[in-house]
Length: 387
Image 1 (spheres, helix red, strand yellow):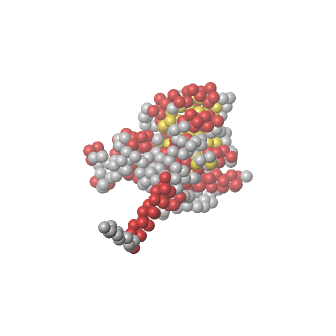
Image 2 (cartoon, one colour):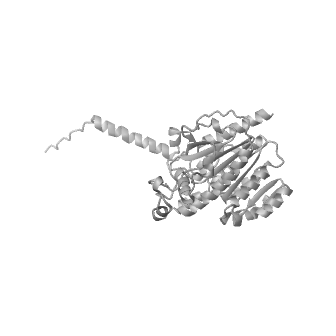
Image 3 (cartoon, helix red, strand yellow):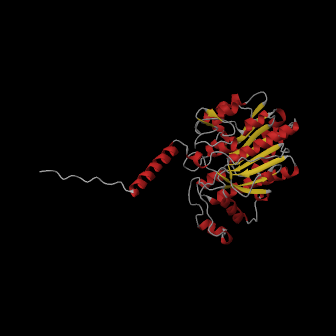
């Protein structure tokens, strides 16, 4: 008995479309897995041209995890019309994506700000064997002093992007070793347990290793460089502690210095409490950060040679306020305005003041890599005009 002959199925136009879409999905998935997706949508910055030659000093302030609604929530709680950062001259927003498909992490986001390059999540200041020069390294070549203040561990990924180059953000000991070997003039953060084993290497003839603010102030008179881990003072919240520390930092970098400085200030715990969906503590951290912003804003306004920008690495927590006009502290406490415990892809705000700030476009989103490009051009322009 003959077996029935199976009819060959015709490949219709619809089938071809399905095959094409499937192939496209496979290609995109492969690209994502190789970390190439970021290059498809956006690899580099906006090719901005900054012509100002007057920015001797540059201050970069990062409210880690701070989005537009974090600021609004703080204003509601504190009954403010505006925060200090909102009183800066130029306002805009920044895209935060990395070369990974997931929302950016601290390593990639800080690397973009520090070097002007996109990397995959987890990478700090490098991709593969290729390292990227950061803004601190570039500034030192131009004779500037550089330093940072952070309210978290000084070896944390976001700070590490300005002070090291490592394949993985968890390589804490390597980050610390590179910080010790670096030419950074001022390091202030926390993390005493991790730094203490390196105390003998940190303390040098011209660099002091300090554990209290009083030690810092004393050392600032005696030594050129400061390496401080202030676990007690930066861990306990105080209304004006960060303001006091950043004031010292700016003074220390400005002292005995004709070429200017680059200062990074990071309010790290805005992100910490956003991950925890703890809106009240987030607001207190943001408010303390904003007081430091206010102090440095006054300093920038009093010195026509200081450029200052305030921004964020990313938005944390997907914070939403349904109706800002009707929002109250009471419903802030009753409702959970956070909708995630992770970073999001949302754009984040920036605020700027000082030489070159009005050249930054505010009518379209910038990329986070633009921050590096702006600062680099300001440094180059000042160096050229001063030579």
